[in-house]
Amino acid sequence: MTEGPAGAGAGRHIQVPVLTRVEGEGALDLVISGDRIERLQLRIFEPPRLFEKLLEGRPWHEVPDIVARICGICPVAYQVTAVQAIEAAFGIEPDPMVRDWRRLMYCGEWIESHALHLHLLAAPDFLGCDSVVELAGRQPGLVERGLRLQALGNRLLALLGGRAVHPVSLRPGGFSHYPAAAELAALRQAFAQALPAARDLVRWAATLELPEDEQDFTCVALRHPHAYAIEQGDILASTGLECPVADYEHHFTETQVPHSTALHSHLQGEPYLVGPLARLNLNRDRLPPALVGLLAEAGLHLPSRNMFHSIVARAVEICLAMQEAIRLMDRVRPVAGVRVQPRAGTGIACTEAPRGILYHRYRFDARGRVEVARITPPTSQNQARMEADARRSLERLGLDQPDERLRRRAEQVIRNYDPCISCATHFLRLRVERR
Image 1: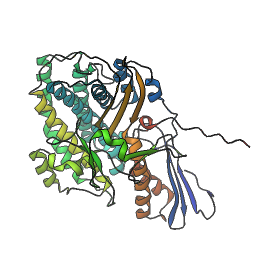
Image 2: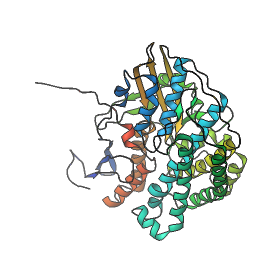
Image 3: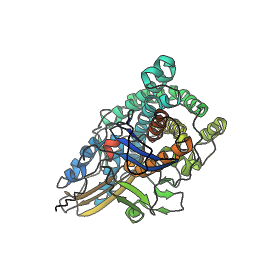
Image 4: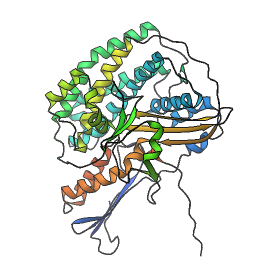
């Protein structure tokens, strides 16, 4: 943290050089002038990773394995979205049982990702600890519960995908292999035994003393006609927008900002929120009755305008994914895949990664090679909202607070979004001025 002049009239210049306990590295520049924030910039300065350019010229069957490398925490989100975009481009309609297997696998990713963020990254912020190591010393049972739940999610990924990180079984039209019935039954029993712990997690999260930070923000999430949307659905916004995912680019825009390698996304010119709280706000009527009762018991009223309720939303979604995984494990059966016949065309898909909606668009030539790829991850969609949230939250806290307290609140706000900064880095447009 540094202080010093930062332009005319600036009172203090605070820089949070590295936002710890997030995936990737970034910095927050804050210029305070009197009782207002003159400039606030969340800088994602990781080098561009060029995945979209890397995909150009690649055959269709390489795409799912390549995009899985975008993120080690949520590779299934990238794979499922890519697979469904390929199917859309080639006119493939997978068996409904294949969709059940994908949803089951996606549940594993929601569980492991939410449990990781909730216990290891976010909980220390709300319990007065600097790290999960300190938290484990004070409340070992809490951390152990989180690790057990995360391990269950990883077990499900490994069983269905061949390994927990960067699974290898997902294919357009099906899976390359299915687990043995006995293995699935054993895992189903482990999930049933752990379900009470997931319910206790919701109760615990609801007891946290969270900052009172009501804000007005737009929520965006997928919406399914019958189920809580995970791997399928149309796009719904709290503004009233409802559209198929194929129309995403007609409504949402991405722009480059000078201070970040992550693009900023806007809906009708305004920032918006994706992720667990947005999903819960827009899909609360799709929750199972048992979870509705649990929310009422916990005293959480939806829709919520407090961004810090995201930690409760993650706990709810862990419990939801546990229940959904048990339901699906009772019904899934191996099913033959389909033969993929590539053709020229464009495929679009959108799914709900743990951190929010993930959009993929691919254009293929007649041989099934990628001509154009576009991938819009949740963190880049949330970046403008993170900046707006940090500005309002800090001003509400009081800019006369000591710099250390402002720094802690800024980090707390941004960590609350569970940003995957590496996933969000895109190639910067280069502008050269010579005189």
